[in-house]
Length: 289
Ligand code: PMP
Image: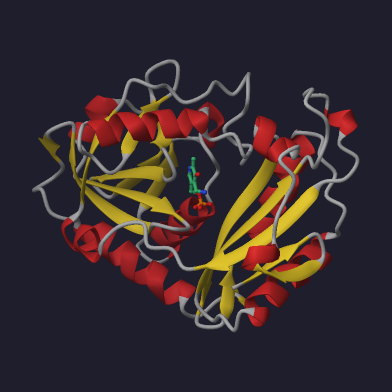
């Protein structure tokens, strides 16, 4: 396996970074998770735009143009002869000293890993996930805005640990006011009476690229009304359908939340149609490798 590191394609064993890298010492950096299907990278432009926006928000200047970054991603896929892949692009503040001052890090570290990812077994896509709400609240936007896809994922990891302790694969996180925000690595949608609702990303959630794609599918293909609106656990429990979206998980049904069956306890019909339309898009769109 070859890794792109600071401009070079290296063997995995040789792709090493310093223990003084602030990405490691402080979670000071940004990243993207991207997918390639059938020889095309899905929504590459959107992912790179979010990467550069995240970097801008933390005042990290990526020493590559967007075009150069795009080339690097494609070069890594070609170097690994991959047509189907999960791509992880990471930009850290770079190597500095033990203080947290980012001015001591003269050069960002950039690396791109292309690999496979399987988040959930097939069975969950067919029967749905059973998940819970956890007590760890999503970070407040006034501190580290969850819209920044930063390397500091402890907020999400703490929530994941809570879910795992209860024997569940994923956690619903509320924002500080108790409204549903998102899951630890996925956005959340509910559907009832022909209306598809997802929390507005401004309340403290990542503006997911799968989320945007699904909203477009729902509007254009399913002719559903789509709302970005605040809602509570009550609305989760009483929704007819629920599903999660993310680059790695794609679209996955949720059939139980906090012990309450969602709808009739099986993946909903709109969810199944959205899953199908999403698969059609990923199999036919994207930047050619
Ligand atoms: N929320 C969080 C916290 C995430 O980490 C992710 C995955 N990157 C998502 C939502 C889904 O975003 P996307 O559809 O862009 O992968």
